[in-house]
Image (cartoon, rainbow, N blue to C red; front, side, top):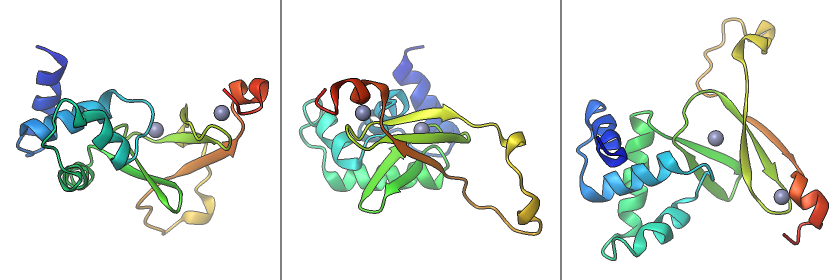
Length: 141
Ligand SMILES: [Zn+2]
Ligand SMILES: [Zn+2]
């Protein structure tokens, strides 16, 4: 089975019809580690699919979120990024190069003492700072 076929199967298992644009968008997101914005996804796929519209990208991302195959990360208010990794993990955003890097978070080490009786709907862990390569280059990498 090719990677694309595997992603198609994941879509089907989640009751999403794997149309060609949906499959391209989901494969791109699932194989990307960069937490792309909808615009970045659109630009990356535009050559392969000149008929792709931004509307299709947004609609597909919304379906993926609804089916919990992707999540929206809004580290910055004006910038929605998407992640196909829906397991709990932290995000580090470099303030100079804007890269968003994953880091592992272990739920069992988080204290929920003050949250007894609360329904947790979302867990977002964001760190911000300067990445090692920007520290060396001063952000001119
Ligand atoms: Zn950086
Ligand atoms: Zn992530």
